[in-house]
Length: 320
Image 1 (cartoon, rainbow, N blue to C red):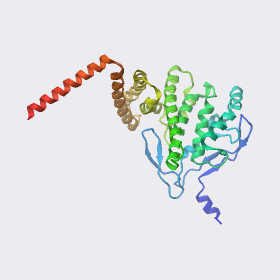
Image 2 (image 1 turned 90 degrees about the horizontal axis):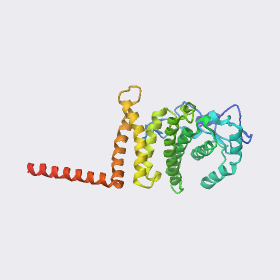
Image 3 (image 1 turned 120 degrees about the horizontal axis):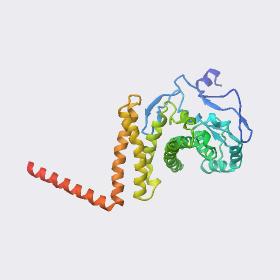
Image 4 (image 1 turned 180 degrees about the horizontal axis):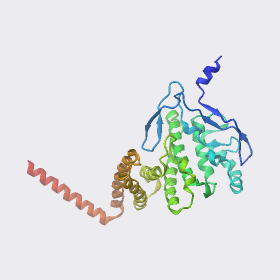
């Protein structure tokens, strides 16, 4: 029999002392949170998607803190970030009550029946963010649902990618790519929403992350909008003219980040370096799309290429 000390060594999470009551169905539950300290998390590299990667932990096993960040009612599957969980309006509660079967179907279709009241692992984490996207569709503008859907879709994609690496025989990769494209679309809407002042963005500032160890705030939103657009533009539009317009819009936002970053010491150099590299890539991509849909521009670029090739040939001829 394992001793209490042995059990404690492997304990990575705990249940809140106070219960939470679901505003939708009235079910009470005790939220699970990750314990901190004792070397449970070993931070690794930062990816191009601003995702903090964590190294394998021989003592504690694999731990991803994102798994614990969304609160989910185990009965009706209502999900929200903890700050928003209890404050649903009467209108929102009614909409959430009417969509319980829909949420259950989403989970059962891709994962079978899962008990969201159990201690969490990767599958619970992925499910929680998928539910989060679905539930924030039904929330009003006052809690800034658009950036919360953007961050949730991106985190869902990350966790689904982890699941695919563990169980490639399941179609987690297709579901992952779906949420990546959703994230790309939502990040674009976040910028549009910010510009129009439709949602109070201060209500979402605390979760913009997109990882938990560092909040890149709106710099991160601008960068990720461009990064995800660049990566998934083929799924976002079907013809080169539309692709050009989408990439151009994202690149204009990115230019503000890159341009201001060059003269600001307050921004970490890593995001400025990433932005510069991405800015150049998007410029080349836009040129390719314009060549496809603009015959005059295509002719001009072909002429320039021919002249450059002739000049190179001439120089090479002189050096022989």
